[in-house]
Image (spheres, rainbow, N blue to C red):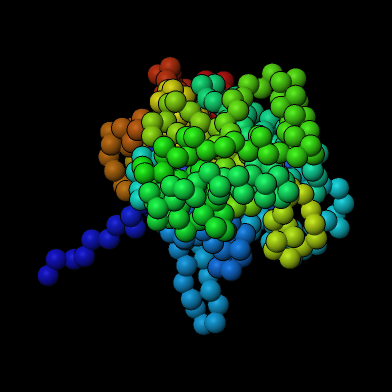
Length: 422
Ligand code: AMP
């Protein structure tokens, strides 16, 4: 009987050894830049309570209505996290993080899960990095958040993008706008998609985010929120745009940008790249002043963003940007015979202790095959160990690139290697 063949689930992708160095390099860049901004890392569990995600993100959003992976075990309802803002806010409330003082400047990197239809740039398990600044409603926080986001792309060398910006208003402005939107949409509601009809009463702003064909002509003509912002929301947004201009960060105003979660208030933004094709959103975020209270905390303003790491990788590929250096190993021990293999095994640690990377053949291959393997591993040096060498106590150190060799005692080899002298 044929053995079964196993594969990953649809939309779930293995990151193989040839790929992982660039993921590590990207993570390193994020950690370094976060440190420059004085953001602190937070790591939360992969699974959360379903109720938190439904309440946090919104029942009528695509994520909650169609895309969450949820299951029940015992009496608990688990969900694989589809994003990290609600979980981070949950952690903030659960651990009374406001008691640490000031605003909490948090960042994260990790996998998220959404049961979407997979395509290029859209997976079911994907990775995001992001920032949440909890406790400040100052436009400075919005702008620092956007600056950090831009800084990552800038440092990597991705410059071809568009920052779209909108204000979705505070609750008062939103009520006025929702009413205007309902008045506008109502006469044609029966011509619109079923989903939009469902959203009409409870959350008509979600309709602006609709991808359904039949909704588009109405969305295009819909009233814009800017005309309904109260003075406070207007002033906040003006200060955000002024600061951005002062920092030389270009943006485009997009009055229909509402983003995919219900929790956004006031500032909303999205970063898109023409290098990405149809899934062109690199990152997005905004202010969510109501979320902390919504999930059981005190009234606390907050702002954040999340960026897709697979999309960033795709942009790097399109632009020929190499995030990681070519892999190499400092030293490869080429051994002839069992005695030489034993000797190499006991001397590997000494090279590693000197701060170098070192490996040897594990397959008792011929010398020729080992030299070939050393080249494949991109070894900078080989140490050739055979019976004669062991007897003499001198070994051949070969600089693979320069094809230079020297016969030396082991201690002298380590000395030379640490100083990269040969
Ligand atoms: P969101 O959390 O929906 O605001 O998404 C933030 C960013 O995450 C997007 O701009 C994308 O870059 C990325 N993203 C969202 N969903 C996916 C997905 N299914 N696969 C890959 N990247 C995604």
